[in-house]
Structures are given as C-alpha cells and as structure tokens.
Image 1 (tube, helix red, strand yellow):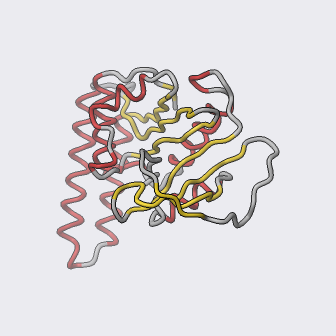
Image 2: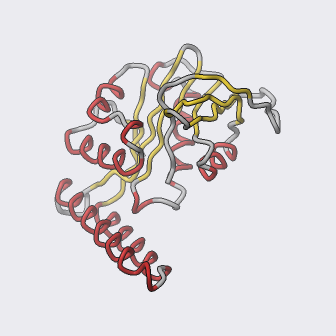
Length: 226
C-alpha cells in the first residue's frame, strides 16, 4: 500500500476500470480523476497485488460463484467467471510479465476541506473484495489525514458520505469510529440521499446514537468497499 502523487498512464487505466465497475456513471470522476488527485489538498493511496494474485483471486471468486449458484443461475455465474478472468489477464498484459508485475487491487482518495479531512472515495477491484482491503485502505486514509497528509496540516475531524442503502459500508465506517451526523437530501441525485458521517480524532467523546437531521445538499462522495 503506497501513496501515489501522480498515477502513470497504466495506473490511471486501472483506476478508471475499477471506478467504472464500482460507481454509477454520475458518481465517477472519469478523466477528471488525474486532475483531482493532482490537487495539492488531495491524496491517493494505492493497494497493489502481484498480477498473478489478481488472476488467482479472479479464479477463486469465479469458482465460489459457480459453487453457490443454483441450476437456473449457472449460466450467469459462468459468464461472470469469464469476465473476471479476462479482466485479470488484461491487467497482467498491461503491467508486464514476471514476478514483480503489479496490479491495483483498490484505492482511497482523501483530502482536506477547510480544517477538516475528507475520505472522498474508497474502491476495491472485484477479485479482491471481502478480504478486508477496504478496511485497510480506510485506516491508511485516516492515518494520513491525522498526520497531515498531503497538506502537511493535521486535522481533528474527518468526514465522509455514505448511501443509506449501503449497510455494510456504514458498518465499516462505524467500526472505525465514524458517527452519523446528518442526512443530506438528494446528495447523489434525485431520490438518493446520503448520510454525512464524522470521526473526531483524539480524545473527543463519541455519541452512541447521534441525531440525524435532514439538509438539502449536493456534491461528491465517499466510495464503497465492495
């Protein structure tokens, strides 16, 4: 896991591929991704794995999907397996052959708004989900902001946004100390609200059941672990 100031052309291709897989079109940076992470107040954390591991993880996920699929869903599972394997093989070609070839398994974008830190997005590539990588990325993002991150000024509070429908993501954030602060109406678009969550660093007390108010607001968001 490492900080990346400017992604290479190959890295940017992989990041955009993960983004397309994880987020709907209206929630993507797209080709503005590089400009966003180049901003001096933002930072990018990359989690990497050997290209061979990506192919193995794809095969494992495909095998699991096939084993659990019912007779009616077997064709769909087989199609998913073929897609995952093809993606891993494409990545391997991009990063080259050999034991040191790397592929991006996930990423975290963090930044600073005024005096607060922000976890903007967390995303994990399909073959590496449900392995704790989202947790590790979030922990690293918190640590970078706590020590000052790219802005070199430590923050006392970190914010992120989560879709109320993404229960597993919200549980992850709560497990690391984030608490719901308010509900933002139509944050992700018409009919799609967000929960603003805050983490107070240091010794500030954390309420167990904070009230959630409703505010109309739009903007970018944190991602899902997958």
